[in-house]
Image (cartoon, rainbow, N blue to C red; front, side, top):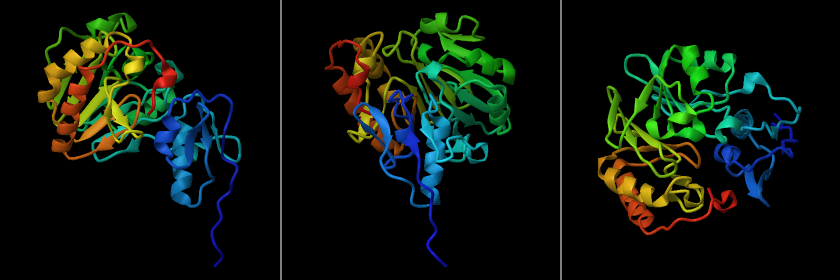
Amino acid sequence: MGEERFEGGWRVDERCTNCDVARQLAPGLIGEVDGRSVVLRQPRDRTEVRQLNAAAHACPPRSIRPPTGQLDADQDPFPLALDDTVHLCGHNSPHTAGANSYLLRRPDGTAMMVDTPRWSPSLAARYESLSPVTDVLLTHRDHAAHGRSYADHFGARLWIHEGDLDAAPDADRVLRGTDPTRIADGVVAFPLPGHTRGSVLFLADERYCFSGDSFYWSRGTGDIEVAETVTWYSITELAASLARTVDRLHFEWLLPGHGDRRHLPADDMARRLRRLTAHTGQLRPRAIDFDAVRW
């Protein structure tokens, strides 16, 4: 038999917003050049074709284009299982700054959605087919755009913190103050003001940390980082939030809104988070600068 060939022609069009989503899903195939994503090389096997299709179906402006020029719904991998409990929703929305969102499956057969993908009834039905969704958990205002639409479709409760309530004033549940709040068995909300006044981290089963935009895994540094140049509220408050919370956070999976995901032993995560907390305490306010963020 001859060698199997894979059609070239994958490209990134001019709509790219340099959000990093495609680079997370197709590392080595899509990279950053001159402030935007580009296809570094064409796929060499089926695994790489799947990675590019995932990137294309997640890209907020739909700027990742396959050889045919049109996305193939049959090649849509989302929701994409990260393990047997958490799925990545994909279909990132330009109205949530291209944030990642997740489905958290629970032992009783239900699920929770953490932040939201782009809205469409067909996507909602796709996610709901995995498990009935009981709650939509918003980590902060930047990711709230489609919360009500998904919650209404699912018949679910919509959660947000009072500090960002103006972004979802019709929320069903409002988190208040800075004390942890139990959402359901095994799921706890930790208010973490800093990135925004109402930023929240959700911890599930002492294994999964949905950190919103409070911190993320950086491919550039190979460590947990804060995006100090896109901290809208207060880097000083973020440092205080981390110091107050760090010893209560035990997890193996870091699942942020922006930046990369990472699975490591819990003791390794804990050491890195303590180091990040000490570092963040030394930071001082800086002007907002999206271009300065290095994922």
